[in-house]
Length: 281
Length: 353
Image (cartoon, one colour):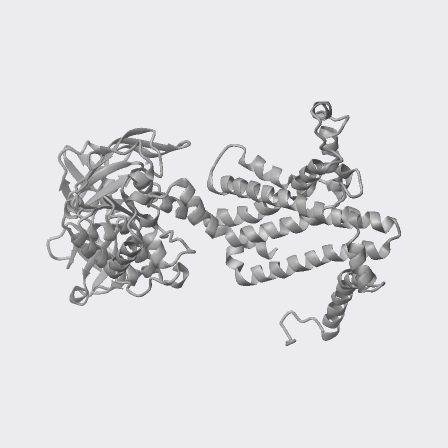
């Protein structure tokens, strides 16, 4: 219910503000999504399914799933280890580590991709050694995985660090005194206390892994059917004027985003306290 | 029965000295209080005993076995943390059972035996029927008792409690204090608890160790330390006390603005401070025999006693008297009264302190 508050904005101003933000949301969020859906189905449902079924597109979906299957667990493990160290121990260089974890967020993904080309590429530092052993990193799947891991590295760690710092060490110390080993303490005390925040972080990490464009675009080499992830394939199809196929594949990514948002909302709603303060941000 | 022997324990955190050569011997079955202001090292001492801190130097043995080389889980310790540290995602029953369920398979009791033990402990701490609840659903007093039951579940050789009543409100605190005393008497497990509340320490403990700046100032039975404080620190820490500056020469303390003379053999000549507790200050009519004359500044009623704030010369004195005396002596602000001192102790003033 709209109620006259002490702040005292007039009715008209309030109406204008609400209309303004609603209009902004429709223009920039709802309309593009609606347009995406309508374009994807412009030639009918059969064409939608057919365009998703082409070998190149199927290969792109498979590759994205493969990259996610490696990058998400890798960053989950890293996030757990880093946040555990940072939250539960004092060590020299802790602030440096905290800053480094944020680096991928502040660096443009394109630059991240270029750095890996400079390290692993044919003319890069490690290029000659790698090619001597017949290992391809750049313009191949390993390069895509490395670039993706770099870009999505902070997601799990940033979710866990504030929560674990807030929870402190007392429960772990208590478990140790009661006779638990370090391993038992981790599995039975530390992990259950952070499980919802961990799931939340993994979810955000996964969404970013599957949607990442900039860094993978640099290291991919755009070999159709081989090194094209879903976002890259969308761009390629669009540039081929294959609008229906491009929007069909894009609709899958949009669907992933929507599902992520729904689960995220559900987690926030049911486990607010256990996700931590960063969860509401 | 297991006693604790601590010899010359040293612990520092960076530049801060937390324990400075602590020697302490806890008798088997004893209930010992570690009493001191914050920063005196009492919690650090408790954590060193539990193995949660590693001292730089010293010896620690429990029941005659050297403990410093052992991890916390091999020390046979029951520890109740200041804020209880209950496992928030486990039920009360799972919390209590934790110490048993993490044991190696060959030493772990069966599921039924564990469940029976949990029931037994729940009833010991008078929490029957709440085994299925989660910690956030409990009151402060209940959490404290769950933490205690969890610590007792492993049948510890010694029980350590860090500020066990610190997070509770005054009424619950007094109740739990009596209850813990009773429980200790029944179980007889060697128990050390940390507190900054002298009332709590004096009331509950068999012996009290008073810590100051990382070392033990005095240790003894509550009466003993209260009646014969080893230092002005102990005296000041164990309850409210009046400080009266004085000058000592050849074993006699004299006061400016006061005819009082106190024998204090052994105190070196020079500036000193005399201490008298408020209940050791008696008030009388100006005409009677007295040590000193004071002017009443104000009165405040504390239950059956009344606290009279007086002044002599530039100094303030507080006296606790019976409420009936207030009327008998017609005590009102501004009135001049005689003061007679009971026990009064003189300590040299600390240099530059």
